[in-house]
Length: 203
Image (tube, rainbow, N blue to C red; front, side, top):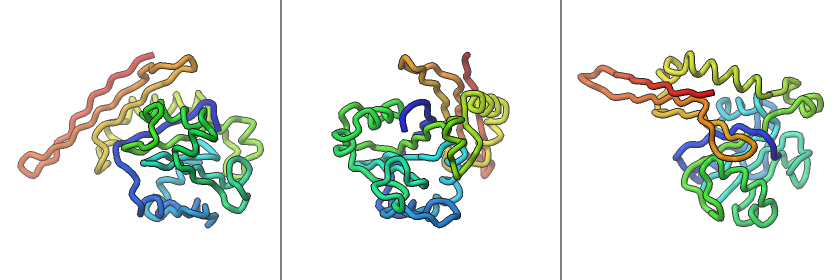
């Protein structure tokens, strides 16, 4: 559950209906006892291209999906587990700390936003996985970053709510090493939609 991971963050909080709307996992109909997918369905399920154990943190809650029932679920048939942040801090402090790179403040038990954390599927995990036999490694990540640098502005052209997209790398020793930043802005003038993008990248 720890180790290298992709973290996706935004400034929107999950509402009660949202938590209630992320219950069913994938097309298999597997269900997390206190969750369902609703409008998140297909979009959320893309997380399984990266990981077998996606988790999200918002407001006072952290939810972890465990479709195999072999990591964090109290019972295999639960396919996941939810934690109040204060409880998670007491029981699994290192796990909660792994969300701090996504903006969670140290010692904070309520987060104004949402953080998705996707532990990368290792080669070892891929061999045992019933979801995907394809590992998601650093090479795959670098290829995605390269594609974002080349095609990002075109991809963001079709988004409705995303105005800024930033990709940062967090090295093992800590801190941030910006890899790529794509800033996208949309405004309307005389009924015409105008777009502007700016690309910053290092490494």
